Every structure is written in C-alpha cells, then in structure tokens.
Amino acid sequence: MSVPRFWREIPYRYRLIGSYCENCKETFFPPREICPKCRRAGNIKNIKLEEEGEIFSYTVIRTAPPEFNTQTPYVVALIKLKNGPLILSQVTDCDVEDVEIGKKVRMVFRKISEDGEAGIINYGYKFVLAE
Image 1 (cartoon, rainbow, N blue to C red):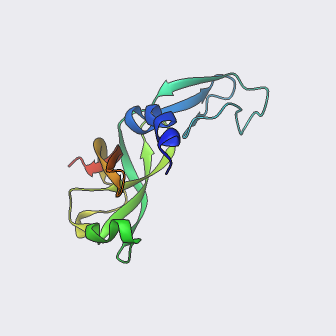
Image 2 (tube, rainbow, N blue to C red):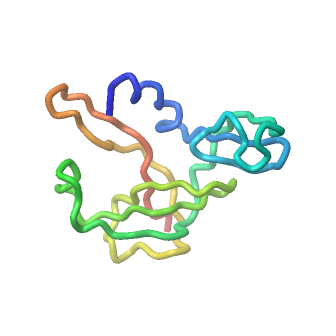
C-alpha cells in the first residue's frame, strides 16, 4: 500500500468511520458519498461506528501471503456491528478453535503490516473475542 493512500485512510482505519443515509436510514462501511440504496436521493453523513458486534461468518487462513506467514493460522471474519453494517476484519488474540458464529467481539487497535524497506508500520482495527 502506498504511504499517501495509507494516510488518507487513517480516519477509517483508526476510528471506524462509516456513512449513514438520513433518507433510507442505512449505515455503510466503508464510507460512501452516494447511498447505494437510494442513489442520489440519499442524504449522506459520516458517523462513528460501534466498536462492538458479533461474528456473522468467518474463515480460518492456514496458508497466507508471505507478509502474514508468521500469523498463521488466523481468523478473518465478517463482523455485524451493533449499529448495522457488516465489516471484514481479522479476529486476533485467540485460538482459532474459540471462534464461532454469534460470538461477541470488540474492536482493538493493532499492527496490520510493515513496509520492509521503508520500515513503516501500518496500524488499524482488528477484533478480539469479548467473552
């Protein structure tokens, strides 16, 4: 990922900022300028999303890309946040056997990746089991 792109995405990676359409009352992540449901009729505003939710679906990654080999096996899940949207995130700090559909999770701030030559560490959200 390029450094300028990473800096532009900081609000969404650090604070879970999404979009809310005042017309159809839908919440979206990542943020959007046009409501995908109402199209241009929507009135969109940015909102801070809930940092708690539950696992909607998940998969265990056992063969990862080279930059994530040291983390295998790890869980990637669809998380249903309390205020609506589904987001994709890694579930961390747990055994893969402990992860189940319906389990409560909460957002944490963790290292995502590291740019080897530049030494830039990219941080963002992940989720941990709340129970």
